[in-house]
Amino acid sequence: MALLDNLIAVLERWDVWKELKSNADKIPELEKRITELEQKLERCPGEACPKCGHLTLRRTRAAPARHTYECEREECSYIEHHNPMEKRYSR
Image (cartoon, rainbow, N blue to C red; front, side):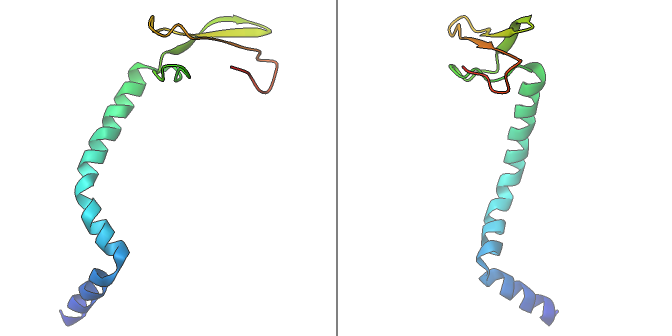
């Protein structure tokens, strides 16, 4: 038992151990937040709109040289054109 007590005493002096102990209570809250975010992404598979930040950017038209992406939110109305033949696309 003395060995275990010594080990615990050494750990208590280690800053990383202190931080781990203080953050252990946050794990259930973080797991809940992760689950909520994953559920949001399941229902909304779109990309984030660069203007409003909502996950409502969808490809609305596709042609060989031009794809059009539009934000589905009426308040935003962001539109983006992308040439799939180019490696980089402009916004």
